[in-house]
Length: 342
Ligand SMILES: [Zn+2]
Ligand SMILES: [Zn+2]
Image (cartoon, rainbow, N blue to C red; front, side, top):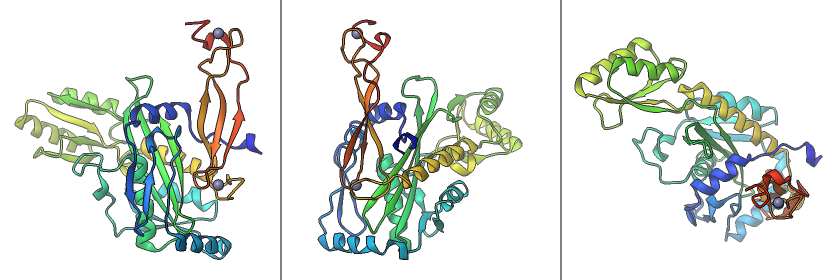
């Protein structure tokens, strides 16, 4: 059974989280019910898995009672409407008996935008969790879903673009979060400063325009425009902007409804979430149990020094801290050994 379960985090992702986000320590997110929620050493995670501490014993008791009546409750997941992500999320979660309920009364852009009009105060995983928690608060649904994407260079191959998607599912009754995380280079993420219409058209061509929208300028420019999807409109806007400035900034629009590649990433992240929902902790029986860490250093077949191959997978429950080790490689080939093959 265990072998048939998918791998939830890939190795690129582990390294990305370790290298790019290792500075964020002890970030505190206020829980909507005024229970403190600490995300401990969050972004050294998965090396230090996310933990929460709740001090409210009444809620915990309520949670235990609630657990026994789970089957009586509807499986509605509240999702704050943002950029039509529900079109890929809802069908996948429906297969597991969840009904995604849209909530449009909250503007998720107030938590930060890609284009920088509103700076982001929370880290990516915190922002996803915050949206999920807000969704449950606004709707009084038991479950809430939060989505957050980020873009940057590939963690190993710097010239490749990289998209990191996070989906957080919050179970308000159990005070339990499940995170599905996906890293992919299948993105058109790019930006460029151009000083002629020809350069602008070349950028558009390599950015999958017009199926993928573009952004012209930065939020402080008078000619700033997002979601440009018409070629004539794009040309007119670039020409007008170049009359005011010798060069202008162009950027791919990464919002899901403007970017089919991003939408596909969200779909694949939902598939991961769907798999995690079927993976239960052997101890507390909550879903979301999965791989949280690859233990490095399988011993070299010749000299027994630790190689670059992982020796085990660590599976953890983020709720009760139950942990299991699953051995991967008893020995590593000498070609992966820094001593034998430096
Ligand atoms: Zn558990
Ligand atoms: Zn060796």
